[in-house]
Length: 126
Image 1 (tube, rainbow, N blue to C red):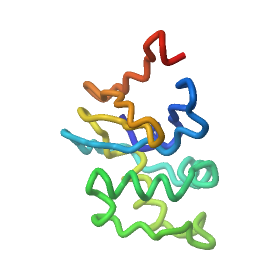
Image 2 (cartoon, rainbow, N blue to C red):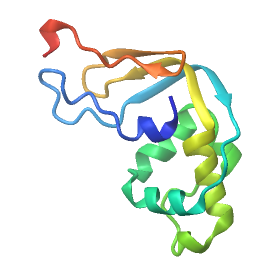
Image 3 (cartoon, one colour):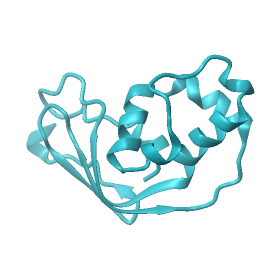
């Protein structure tokens, strides 16, 4: 699961959950794959990210310190290639292969296996 995907997932569908975002991450296996850098894509996706959740996710999988992501989006980010490359790396090249996503409200665990988060709910949770 890429951190781009994580930034768009929530557990709000669980009965009684009001927000369900951001999901916590416990990563047991991470891999890094090279992905072609596309500054236009990264520039367009940054405004759609919940930046705080994104940086927390990077820290929780122990990669935030490798990229020195700032706590907020920098001004004029569209023209800062170094910043865009750092964001690109964390969003698209880092993948949680095995681990868990955790609902912040119920602590319900959703497993990640082979890079795929299983967000299926039990019948009593709907």
